Amino acid sequence: MTGPIRAGAERRYIPAMGRHWMLFLYDPFTRLAGLPRVHSELLDRAEVQPDHRVLEIGCGPGDLLLSLSRRVPQADVLGIDPDPAALRRARRKAARRNLPVRVEQAFADALPVPDGSLDRVLSSYMFHHLDADQKVQAMREVRRVLRPGGELHLLDVDGTPRGGGKRHQHPLLVDQPPERILATMRDAGLTGAAENGRGQRRGPLGRYVFYRAGT
Image (cartoon, rainbow, N blue to C red):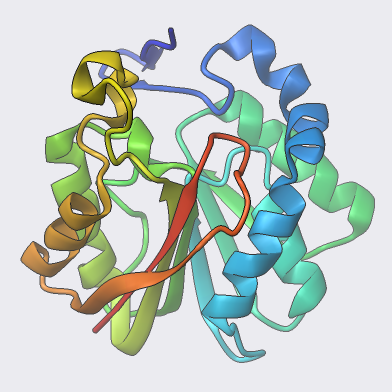
């Protein structure tokens, strides 16, 4: 079972692979699990344009950011994550590929971006790492930083209880059914919150759902 890791003296977070020592497994795991295909599906839905400013929340080692930068090299792309080790890996990947992505240490509920400055906010398999209060504040922050007409595109595991119900559910997925995520978006003031498709196959963490909301 994963647990929160301390970030400095004040904040705690869950790293990309659940444990810091497992970070070296991230790239082979995500390739074997088909995450590049899932990321491509997310980017198809986001329709990022060359003049867009884009933020990824919970970028980890940077795979989605790099895929976006290869696809739309003119876009202004920033990723945030609380894990400095994952950010170092993301910077190394970007430098090797000569891709102009930037990453910064920050948390989903305190985005280091001015009000109304972004065209797209993306997030992939991060939202289930947040507790209920952090989810609410993160969506308020997304609403704050999106400009009029901007869009949030979020991908995450489907937390709908199956089989034995909540008793056999991973603790991170208890607050993760799609209707709860959509309600959190709407309560934050985002408009048009809706499912934007479901994976036809199982993703790296099971069944997954795409969400879209705007301003």
